[in-house]
Amino acid sequence: LERDCLNWTSENVNGLVLVHFDTEQCPFDHWQLIKRAIQRAGVSAAPDWLQSYCVAGLSHKDICEAIGLSLEMAAQKFGGIHSFILDGVADAVADVNDPAESNKFISELHALAIQYDCPIIGVIHLNPGSQKTRGHLGSQLERKAETNLQLEKDDEEISKIWADKNRRASI
Image (cartoon, rainbow, N blue to C red; front, side):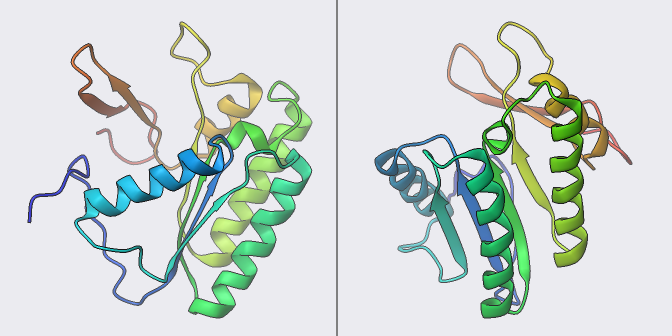
């Protein structure tokens, strides 16, 4: 079966939940994102264990609270967390340049990854015109992350993925 998943594969043999928070898209664009993911995966419908939430418009405090609550409820319902994707990490803090707030939030994410024994995939944009992630939050994410991937589309709309700051091996 031909699939367009950027050569990524994953299995979820135990049916653990994948929780996805989209902080950036309006409800329609969020729906389109999930629809596109379903098509790329070559399946007809999203599996029950995919719990995707459009949280655009919530305050950073509400997003943080929702992360903890949704992971707790999902882990109880599905017996564990497969992974958590936070698309729009910067929307979970008031100020990406505040070291105390950024460090606290990244520590909380790290604790959740340990508590639920799952990877947390965070998406954060680069500062415009640079290769530096946004603010102190981006720097702290880079320091604490197992793997830092960067995606870039070329002029032909082909996505390239690379990593230069990883704990164990380069990609």
